Amino acid sequence: MTLTLIVSSYNQLDLLKRVLLGVTRQKAPPDEVILADDGSTDKTQTFFLEWSKKRTFPTHLLSQPHENFRKARILNQAISTSRSDYIVFLDGDSIPHPFFVADHRQLARKNFFVQGHRALVDKKALSYFGYNSLCLDSLRALFTFQLKGIKHAFRWPKALTRIRTDLHGIRGCNLGLWREDLLKINGYNEDFVGWGREDSELAVRLINGGSKRMDVRGRACCFHLWHPPAPRTELHQNDLLLEQALRDGHVRCQNGIKKGTNESTPS
Image (tube, rainbow, N blue to C red; front, side):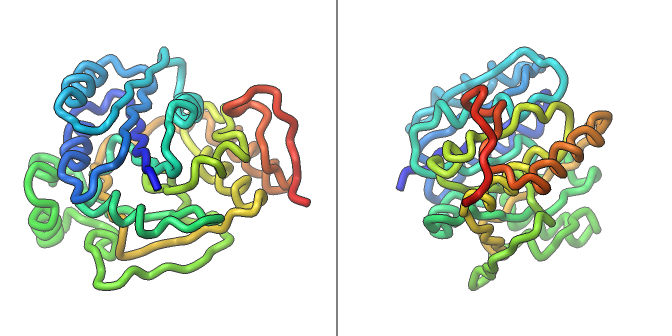
């Protein structure tokens, strides 16, 4: 099984540097890394190209003009570019644990998508978190009350997995799934513009199409670095799109990787 790591970014270079350092420190590196950039203007692209020169695996930089929050669109381009069997999505503000990629490889199962979780690093820990050992940084943040979601911060002796059918905790910052399953549902719905719900709607269509959600704890850990929240001015419209997918049993979206694909419902 080959694995592509797709990292999404937008104008968070300071955070992205630590994320890519985390990728460099993986015990088992990915077969390919794609940066899906939503039009950054802070030298993100230049840094990634320099970082890529030192890697032994293929890398790709994808970018688009920034016209509001269009994460779904750039992620679809990354899915199309990927040539691996399996895709893991990681946000550019979330540092992967050294066993992040290895864990996702081990967790992958046919007809399942894997939802991992994250620990939250608070603002006062930003000055040091991610530059040193993640274990030591996590302990330091923990003892200074700068770490939330402690149960997601450390690998457990044994992973806890369970099958879930709800949408609680669905996040694209730590999501592993088969590329063929993404193509089956036509990828992300690009009608989602502005922050919110594009990952949940993707999960709805995956489940409607026959995939099952495997929720995992104690493996595939990552650490979300504090930053100011994104504007949520379009959240109401995105909620309506999510409700429509739930109500109508959508499997494929029209405005996805391929345009104009008819909606379909599970048989």
